[in-house]
Image 1 (cartoon, one colour):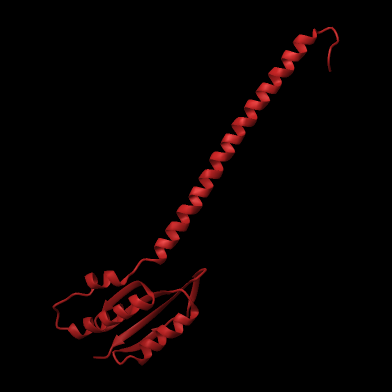
Image 2: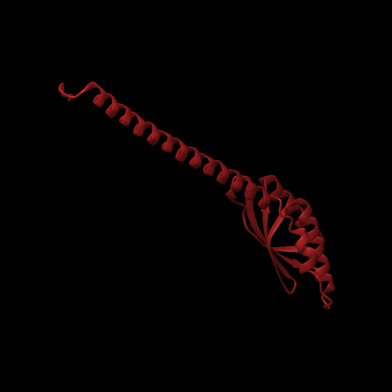
Length: 154
């Protein structure tokens, strides 16, 4: 409610002050919103880079460090190394445990067709017998996992 006895210049200054404060608040809100949008875009690009780097990890590089031995069971290590080299070219190995002649492997795949290819390779190879084979599990989009336990024949 406006009072008629107030001078016009006073009312004008008060309106200018309100407009000035409102403009400053709007500018501050725009700055905060732009900073938040920048942070969200930055986080999205960082997570995208992390996902790409996880997909590009090559476990076959680790195989040369893990499977080296001068033990009497050199055939077991040779066969395991052959499997690891094959696996490094076709799919990723998340976990590999060798206990005597038994090899437990967690394999990460990008499609379900790769599952059939990996199982077919293990079955057709004369070095390994499949002891236990788990079904394929979908971890995320384009990421499938399964576990296989093999026994070295030779």
